[in-house]
Image 1 (cartoon, rainbow, N blue to C red):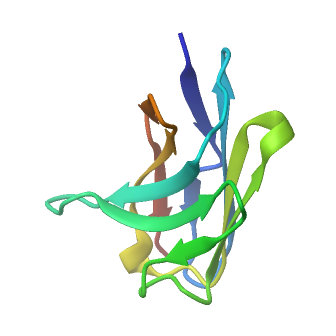
Image 2 (image 1 turned 30 degrees about the horizontal axis):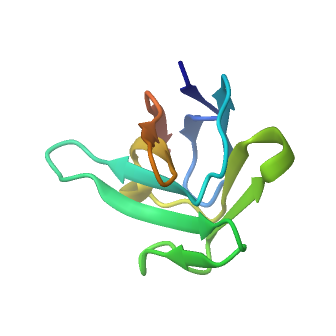
Length: 115
């Protein structure tokens, strides 16, 4: 049974930084796409950043230039470096691993940007 375990969320002031991590426990192979999504209260879940096995990345317009996604294939781990955080970045952040035959989600980690 594969589980995705997220860490790194918390409370930060506007302009601050956080680094989220998501690691897979259990056997998992050929992760095609790793991604981060977020859901704010009363809003739909939205894509934040994606990274393919080849290292290609895609970002939501709202975070491009402030957030950086990276992955460590040897550790089956994906990271999200978040800089210049804004109150509107407040949400529960979820990681997602997609392969040919599977689609796993993490349990979510809260990020709150507030003074």
